[in-house]
Image (cartoon, rainbow, N blue to C red; front, side, top):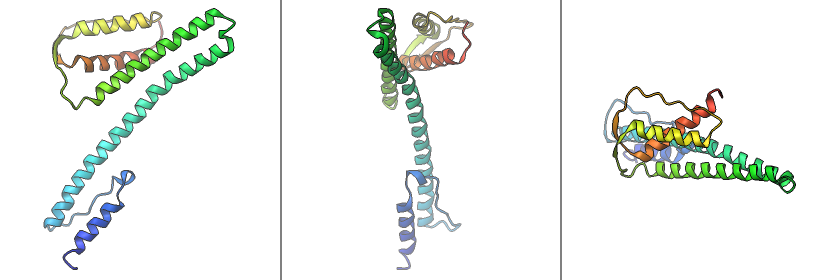
Length: 185
């Protein structure tokens, strides 16, 4: 009974832990016997779990935000179609075009998320000229957003060995934020 008491206490503490309680840690005494070493290892593992859980929580929150905006736009255009679409062909065309564009953006976002979910797998690294990829991406964004002016100033043209898919995801995020948070000109 005496020798198993520390293990029973450790076991009870482990059962009390949950995803809402990952910040709790075991108190480790100065006498480093096998039980105390186990507590140290469990504390390290709990820290890793907590960090992973917080990253996952932030990721889900960001994804939810990224999906909510286009879904709200689609719903708004559908409501516009329901109100005025039958009577006004111009309104109908505008709404259908906007829904198609937004659905395409959601498709790209979903593909990016799927690509990120495979990030732990080996990805194909390609030797690329950064300027060429960035220039192509900026041109694509300019075509999708003709009302905005995109300027690309290049002072160097490095070559990188990188995953082209991940670079495109990064550029999409940067250009999307540039559009959202810059002044229209």
